[in-house]
Length: 465
Image (cartoon, rainbow, N blue to C red; front, side):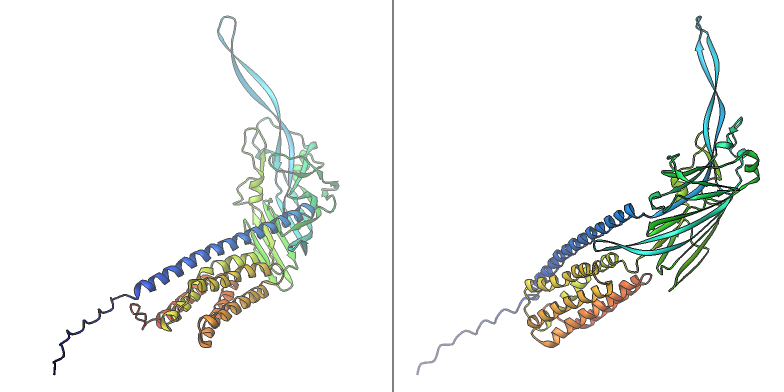
């Protein structure tokens, strides 16, 4: 019997290189990162659409301002008094022998002196309503402003020697941003007389003014003259009043329940409730940045229009929910949505030995991005909350339904759908916050990171188990 040949021992198979799974895992993570970058560009394009729609709304606001009346700013009244003064000019010329000879030329110059009231009280009731241009709704108002106070012009405070004031030609000026919003020509009760304001000419940066000649002389001016006027005007969104008096009081009321108080000072007293608001400003001339009197010449510093308007106090009729602002805030969280959902899919892919193609990731990401476009489109026709709910439900249904075929089991599909629905709900909660939105968002990120760390604490990333 032949002895069978002795075979050499088999060569042991080479052990799997450490990290042989790592290149595939790393490539998948890289591909997911590239997809998130592409979808982030899509989010930026959606934000571009939002800005375009916002521009359309501003065009509608401008159209309403042109036909109804824009954001009104009341500056006045201001008392303007013409005066003349002498100026001396010294000239030096040479005579026939070449000797310098100095000559003096005296000229009479005409200028205007402006005086602000010593007391000013403005009160008004804003009656709001809504105007539509296409699909856009803009708040407007009608109001009757009662303006009263007292002038006591001090010519000596101007400080120009040899000035001669023509008190008989004094004029009362009132500046309004949109005079076309006036329902009728305002009448001024000046002392014991009644005068009517008429369109004036722009002067010293005041823009378009309303003017009236008022009876005045040096004696009555020194003693002080009281005035009162009422103006019924139309405007949109905002009303501002410049506190020109040495002591000013402004009181505004309205049935609008969402006011925003701004300008150079906040109200000294305000009440805001379901019936509307009442706000009262009380200010003195300290800190305004301009004096009680000035001239438009005579070598003195002039007061420009913007200095008066910058000192104004105002109230803005805010719309309860600005959908475009909410969409903008939501888009900032768009990348977070992509990362969270893609992380869920990737963990299922690693732990459950699933194979999910990058195109499938792209399909899910597209559904997430479409949420923001849907939210933007729906918010122009329904309330912001309903628009958010409909867009979130559509996105969640798309992702959950698609996950049923990608993740193979209903449990995994339920985890993705439930997590996405919870994320949408928490984002809506954050969008409603103002002061605590950053804190709430940061807390949620810490919680999600903790969950991710706990879920992946036992995964061997080198072997994929």
